[in-house]
Image (cartoon, rainbow, N blue to C red; front, side, top):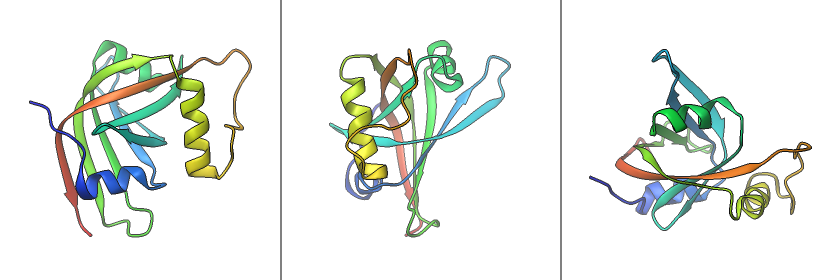
Length: 133
């Protein structure tokens, strides 16, 4: 059963708050990575480079938990549990530039590496829970 990001959860994802992505390694242990996040059409949208650990984990097991903590009030956060709905290279370069504007105030993502291939990961939320505030 899926749901959508709306209300206060959408506000937290729309602001320049960092997202912690929890995935499962092959051995079943948890891998956690801080990332930038966006929200489009009620779904969390992540952007990463191919070859990193957490997107590899999601190729094997699409289950993911995201937590986005309010940078202004760390006791307020949203937890989103869901599954990968889509992986796409289309628009990924423009999307990372959009996130660079949101998080760094820069028009272009300044940390590109030679040969890097960006990928967008859209998450279909199954449960959304806002805490604190």
